[in-house]
Amino acid sequence: KVEYWLSSLHSKAKDAPVLFVATHLDFKECTHQMQEKVRHRLLRLKQIHECSTNSDVIFFSCKSLGGLEELKHQIFSVAVRLPFVSQSVPRAYFLLEEHVVMARRFCESPIIGRAEWEKIVLLTGIPSAQVAEVTGLLHELGTIIHFGGIKGLRDLIVLHPEFLVKA
Image 1 (cartoon, rainbow, N blue to C red):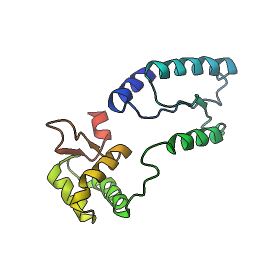
Image 2: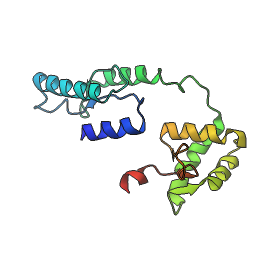
Image 3: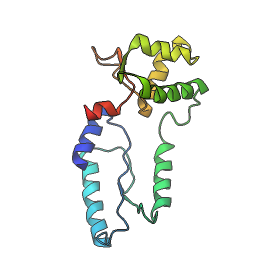
Image 4: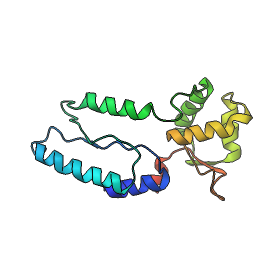
């Protein structure tokens, strides 16, 4: 399953940082020997799939929260290196994101056309000159999916990305 997930991720977002989090630290079977075996396998997969992060495998317990500090540290260290983290984001962009999340509940279709998308964007007070920028940002954040560079799909906006996974 991990190999399939990494292949899918690599094909869609080649430079996306990857953190490996093993979530069964509190299981009896999760001995030091087993952790080393898992670490070795996952780091080998990371190398094969050219993952763009330098982090180790993080072992975490969902029950006792053991490993939480290490997980927080790794997430922070990866996040601060992302290109858009240091950019200030207009408040209207957050308003649009909230609108999209709410619209998922009421839209008949999880996919809308460019004209309808532009209407939604303009209704939140974002100028038409920023439609492409906010669309790209919400795509990067995973709020929507927009295949801007693919002819035949560039005029479609997927408001509910989970729809594509289930389709």
